[in-house]
Amino acid sequence: MIEPKKIIRTKRKTLSLQINENGELIVRVPKFVSDTVIKQFVAKHRTWIDKKVREVLFKKSQLKTYTFSDGEEFLFLGKKLKLTFTHISSSIVKKTSSVVVSGDRLLIDYSKKAKAPELLEKFYKGEAKKIFEERVNYYLRKFNEIFDADYSLKKIKLSSGRRILGSCSASGNMNFSWRIIQAPVEIIDYLVVHEIVHLKERHHKRSFWLKVYKLKPDYRQSIVWLNENWFYLRDFLRDKNFD
Ligand SMILES: [Zn+2]
Image 1 (cartoon, rainbow, N blue to C red):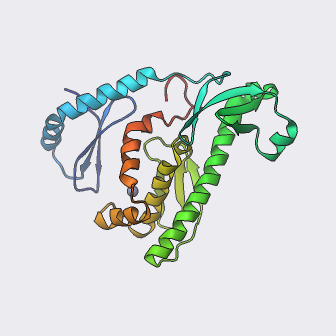
Image 2: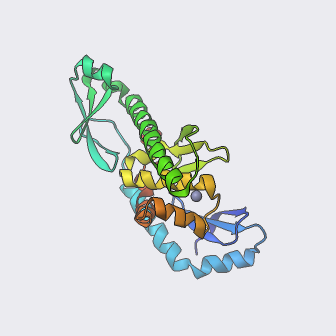
Image 3: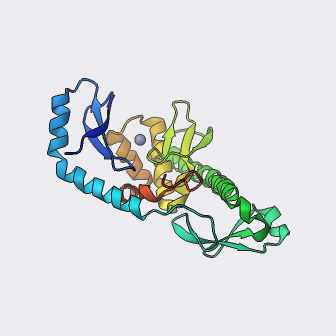
């Protein structure tokens, strides 16, 4: 039987299981739960754990290390774009960034091929910042309207988390992982809505989910999508063999 790699005790009421990107079992439990109870819980969910571990290890075996070569595919807003080195006129590059999206291609000028990883990083983070700001502002307005509130955008910071894709502080600052702009925009919207509702409801009780529903009625599909696809939201810059 698989042994937990880590047991995390926090202020919570229920036990939960998670398989991380290396196929290891992480168990989250309330502060004063005995080892016997944890063991029983793990044993009870053995079938689910085995299935998830197999899934993660399979996905992991399929992942390639990024080489940043011509024709390689990168996810951007849910679409696969092919990295293409070509000649880009300097007037276009100056106006935008060194990376240009054109149809299903991510264009970088030949002369900058060696710097492709850094340029892509800058591009993804820049786009993430713009998209998050735009979506947060949009949903804040909606939230204020529906719930007669008066929240405004504080600061948005970018992280590179994989499992923790968003968070917000009591003072209203928000934190999102830039990785999420590899996902379709509906998923980004769900994360934005999730954090905005946390400004008012700092828990995951029924009143929290009701507000999420009002802002984004199809939010459950996003949760399903994230459960299936979080694995593919890669930090391709820090990927050595596997991230
Ligand atoms: Zn939350």
